[in-house]
Image (tube, rainbow, N blue to C red; front, side):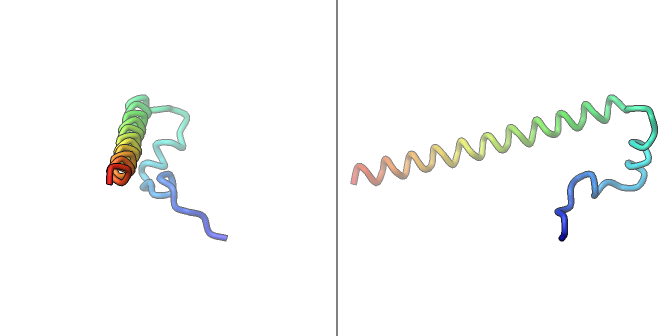
Amino acid sequence: MEFKNTEIDQETSSEKQKYSGSKVDLNNLIRRVKEEEKRSKRQNIVISAAALSAIAVFGIILTL
């Protein structure tokens, strides 16, 4: 059984060493949160665009 590669698996060894210690880098955490927010916003825009396109196509079909 194979598992999908995750972002954690793709980290370099130097990044893994940063996380293995007891200290937490707040800048790193803030950067990750901002990246996640960007991904979420992009995903929401794509879903909204797809929904609006589907509604537009359905409306055009109804008018024919």
